[in-house]
Length: 349
Image (cartoon, rainbow, N blue to C red):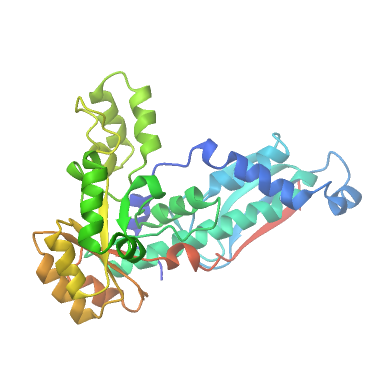
């Protein structure tokens, strides 16, 4: 399935990864693969030989992660020149060239597997995210989860955004989600929310039902770099991150947690009622039937937003989108996305 051209243009607006988010990851990946040296390339390719390599899409995919792939070549040899032909967020048809790189042949050979590993993984996630977003048809917002590869979360969540879906919590300090185990240990949903209200009134008072991309580090970074509150707001708007614009920077009080998400998991309609009575503004309903989801939406309408979770597949997306729920979270975007089928072809230059 090829996504629409409109999707391609929209996703090119995703804020790019920062170098500090992947530079050390690339360094460790190279060390893991190279060890004490590339014995084969050093033995079979003469020093100084130049080559050109091309990344080719063998099947259709949404491109994501080119900066990470480029960093692999740069770290191995800064003389490598990387040229992007299809940008992150754009669709690559089968047989099309995504990017090319020129430089020392040995460096290209040594970088090949690590660069492909990153690119195939991130393109695969972006492609699956695009398919879920297209299946949602604008009727429900598709979210990812924290079910990511350890140490690769920033990269994988970037790929999700590139594909057209949105990020849920980046990490545990980026939102509050009272799940089944929290409620059980606290003595129930109502008790858990009461404890939260007592322990963190600053968060509870200024919480949002809709913020899904809250990043405390980024809020603090913008506050430090901006000279005025208006400048900070403009910077966030330019970065296409609505939840940051609404983070309350212009208030005189500390805004780090303004607009932060507070959500409660419910595994039955009775728990939905309990969460509503306790004042929950967003409810994650887990593994409920379509009829139960519709009833949950009816009960919460005007009182809380609803997020669907559990058993979400592409085949079920049209029915889930038609329930009236605002969100659907899909762990498969990052834990089960198939790698994109790409090749890296090298020729003498």
